[in-house]
Image (cartoon, rainbow, N blue to C red):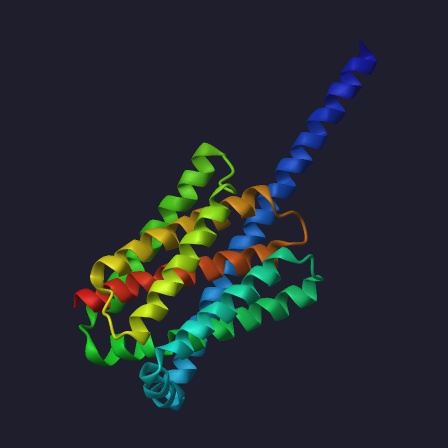
Length: 233
């Protein structure tokens, strides 16, 4: 009886340790996500204050293939970073590169939103992004299910959307509000997928990589939510 009690106690201790480790990992991941968002905002502030954003926006806007190419490179880079088991210090370098690339890609859209739309557009887009992100996070937490099966579908949809965007640029076709809205749904799916990966695929020591993947998905969501408001406006 004593041996059984001892074994039962060890099992309970192991379970508590596992739960504590998971909570610590999630806390570290979302803390770093918050840090990445703050770094992104700070970098955009520097770009606007120094005139870099205003100088780059016309060049990038005159050839949206630059932006699309940037999205392709960024998608590859982020995917590569979040799949590798890098050292903790290297994970920070990878996160910094992702943040810098995101900040550059956002320049034309943010310049247009700041100077050519209503002042409420940015705040409204941010609010909607936070609501969708919260809903996707709650869905993963409530169901406890893995949404890894979404990966191949999101990949195919992403490629199709990219081809549609490139085609619209080459043939001077406006995709419009409903395409942007569809991309918001797609981006919400990416957030759901990445949040599920944080819960089910990443482990101790990978919180920076997990936060990088989450940040990239949230940035994608915000980009298309803001695009939807800009197109509607």
